[in-house]
Amino acid sequence: MSRSLSRLDELRSRLDEINLQLLNLMSKRGAIVKEIGEIKKKQGVQKFDPVREREMLDQLVKHNTGPFDDETIRHLFKQIFKASLELQQDDHKKTLLVSRKDHPQDTVVMIGDVPVGNHRKAVVAGPCSVESEEQVRKVAESLKRQGLRLLRGGAFKPRTSPYDFQGLGEEGLRILRRVADEFGLKVVSEIVNPADIEMAVKYVDVIQIGARNMQNFELLKAAGSVRTPVFLKRGMSATVEELLFAAEYIVSRGNRQVILCERGIRTYEKWTRNTLDISAVPLLKQESHLPVFVDISHATGRRDILLPVAKAALAAGADGIMVEVHPEPAVALSDAHQQIDIPQFEKLISDLRQSGLLSESQDPASVASSGK
Ligand code: PEP
Ligand code: MN
Image (cartoon, rainbow, N blue to C red; front, side, top):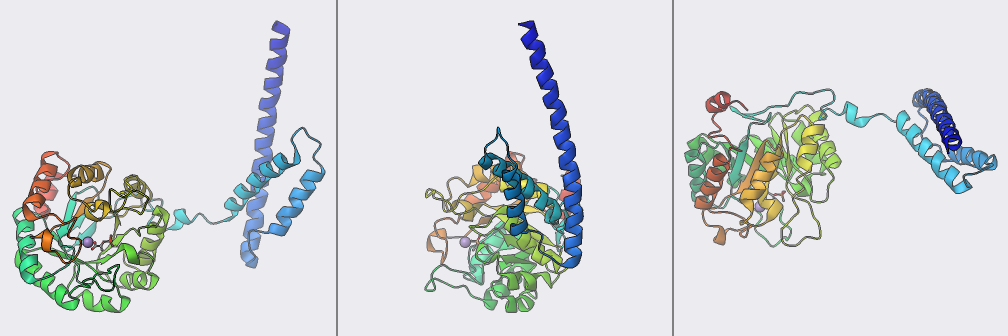
């Protein structure tokens, strides 16, 4: 018994030694691989060389004397080759301008005098589509009453069907501007065409880029070339990484004022319009210094669960929420099923304030005094 124990101890300590030797050899291999990577970079040669990889694998299998079978050897070395290739490739996340790696502090996007980000909790609310001045004014009055500053409304609507209401266009932007100025609010509105950006910045305080356009690269570049803040929504089938790359398009053109928005992704679930990917919120906050919002209306497509979803979003670290509000949702020209009316909106905000997840007012003075 004690003899076999000491033999076991001996074998274990030999394994420990071999592990360290393997680690040492892997580090040496890694250093050589990095040097090869540098040379290839200078020569402009592809880092991945499948022919060379095959030759190395063939040679290893030829020399394999067991006890591992050839397939296992191939598998183990392929893992080593994969990790080596990653060593040669630039770590994009490290160099992305939207990444926290080189920019640890939260970006605060200034929408006029309204600061957004760094855990100040903001609300963007308004109708899905701008339909009339009267309609927008009713929502604006409610925002003002509640000390909220950010008014949304779609003037250019990217509709799934070409026969659906397409929005009032520039006239819709004019209405938003007029009403917002009347109540001291800021305008968030979607632009779908890169050629419209220049015109739009005369009216809007924030350019919204919608889910359907998250990878419209010409639109992203156009939004990057102005200095108006951008509210960028996650595409319905886009990964978190793809959202960050889309934001990078804007920031790399010089516009650093970008807000990211999770608005639900497409899954097989039918009881909600989309599936809110709540984990995207802490992930985006962790990876990026940009403010993160959650659009609770498009994420759910229904009114009855907005409060818990909004709470979840804010508790998960979102810097704000977007919600669709219409004076008479039943007759809305778009998204009639998910918009809430004004009393429902005021109840939602008051419940959120009572829960402590939303501060009393978005006025800069009271934000400063209430801290984070
Ligand atoms: C919108 O906010 O009006 C909209 C169309 O949302 P999404 O792009 O997220 O579908
Ligand atoms: Mn909508």
